Image (cartoon, rainbow, N blue to C red; front, side):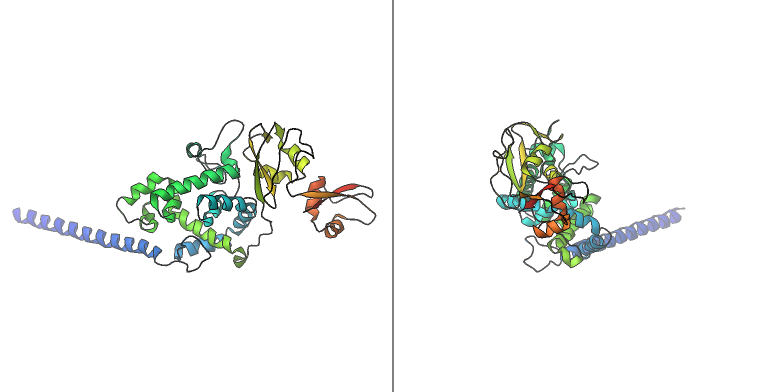
Length: 353
């Protein structure tokens, strides 16, 4: 009986030892695979950030330029409305301009974007983080949707994260899952995103390579068959002197109402109140006054001018667009035309930049 027990004990000990050896080998192999992610970087001055050159990022480039190409195109076209201002603010705060493209994967540059967790706006701020960095949220305004104010908050947050981690890859990961999440994972690992990647939440694990892939495409979209025709727009920031509706402001300034609405998505009912910040579009940064009576004398047109034209026989919107070096769509927008029909003797506003 004793001999049999001794044999069983030796057998169990041998099995335990084999299990331990297998686990150790598999752990080393897994760890080695994750270290391999950080071995190479793009050698170019095109980027301010160090861009890893690995299979994970290349797989997302392939995904964005094949399966999700239309999303990237739409996001970059929307971005033309915000990127000049975002880059300007980031320069002022000492943030790499490459990070101006982060809203591609955060919101698709849609100021109305809202996640299932309640994050809102271009930068997808949760209420607590938004208030922590100075954004106002109430029944009238939600500054998480304000492209100007929310970008300042994002710059402050990114700068704060960098003061903790001193590494932009870790900053990106922390922006997604929070600084506490990253600090906990770094306790028992090297100070590198690629070393802790496999320990992170599934969304954060993909977040950094997704951003780098979108940045590579955004810097040279035509290389990947994505062509952006939108002209960049600058935001001119002013405070409302009185209560007014956005539609009325668009009419007075002669600017595109949909564009003005996108720039002022923080106005919950499209109504500005006294003291509320208003974003106005301009092809160049120049002074704009938003005054009480909203008259032409009291409000300067933000680099969007027009001239009146009386329609003659044979005129079409297309011929007028060529004659005045503009587009059919702009003529229709300035005159609120629902179709392409115009009549002889009709007075049209022709936009002139």
